[in-house]
Image 1 (cartoon, rainbow, N blue to C red):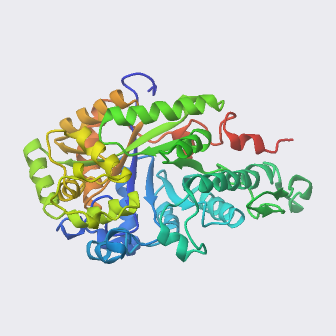
Image 2: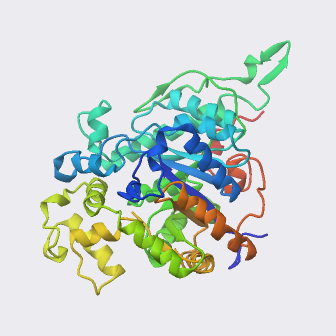
Image 3: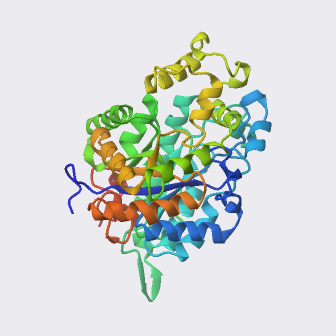
Length: 456
């Protein structure tokens, strides 16, 4: 089936973090949730198998490198509600999930600010070897002050400087992945690798000095499939230059469409095919056999959500301590740039409501940074199709508020309806993650990584 036009295929990613509370805050208390099993391999293997049964392109495992301590100036609220704290390393579970599946891809968040490109390039090549080309990287620069002070910095690097540093990081890893070993370097004929077909990268830049050859031989994709989620001017320019998949957060299709259009326009300015970038807004789906049953299920989820935990998460995201506000006082009376932007966002969503901190915390409790679709398979499918058309996106990053039950409900209930409509994969095509995202196992000729490729 062609991906063009109104009937194009809907691409699906599952969204998790190795923690008890990520987008939905407090729902680990729900009896259907087994999010507390995030520490156990069987939980992740079960999740991966559920998504593969639904022919999802990938499981996206998000990450944060510091505790959420902006709210009240301490980590207490995050600990009480399990808001991204505690959290485990997302890289270490991927091999187990890959061994238990054949097709599902794995996109993982890793920060350019706190990794060294030489060692990181080997980590990702190793995972690409072990997954047989199914690994993706969500590129972040990290915004938490708590991460900076615990990972060797006196204070957080300024926003735009983080992106300048990230640009050089990308140049180094592209040289390692694409330019150090020729495709035919490994010969296994008297010698294992031909030294004439392996060369040092000789990088000497402002932030990094990497002189030698890549440690790993080339993997199926060489460069992992690249994702990014920046929405600032610097983040948009970075995504337009490097991303093959773009994760985004918007509550309405119009807001998503605006961001999609801006990133695609920037990609075109940089010489890339703007349609080669694929966009995946976050979405939470609460599905049941009927609309009435789905609404009842949603109500049971909302009853477990924590408004204070949600504000702790938003405080960290905005770097503004929302605890200083009266939780029941309308926000339009608070005159700061950060709060004003928050007011504008939620007023646009529903101008008839009086938005207080408590009301916002309750509103985002189940869906976090994106919309919640509640209903029967047909109702949910209609909603997803509307988003595809109105926002011009390529698929969805589906969160699971009561892991793994939310993903299982989607696969068992909604995927059959989408297949009946011809909107999702009937079976996997291709072997690597990149083949499903952009059509081929290697980066496209218009991608900056391609310029570093060593060809005879």
